[in-house]
Length: 196
Image: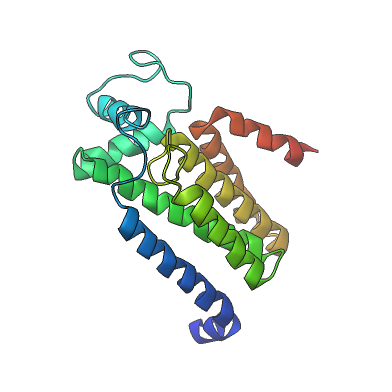
């Protein structure tokens, strides 16, 4: 599909999502550094990722109740960019934007542009820029953020498979479903509706 044909076909969707991205970037600029509480609950996440970077083993040296994927991803970011809370904020902001984009794309398969915009605005206000430990930028546990973005990728690729019957989409859906389980083990229960 040529780019000009794609733009003319999905012009309203592109404009709608650009408006969401603009609002997201304004709020991200305003709230940068104010999400989460490093002293109460959120400080464990960067600490464990830094410990992984130092060679400590999860489940052996540190007890965790979640999957290991988020800690290893953040340790990789620390290795590349240095140990800094802004790295955690940037990873959270990127993941939150992915959640927003995938939520829009998934909702557009079943509803109108206005309803999809409303869903995205609810996600922005309730989940992403919630000034508590349950926000998506710097949450109580970053495992939930990686799990949610992975499961949304799995759903999006599953829908794409149903639309096109391309086997690559079902493989990608299964891979991202597995990544979501590696982040939060309880996401395995999302398999029950698929099995039925």
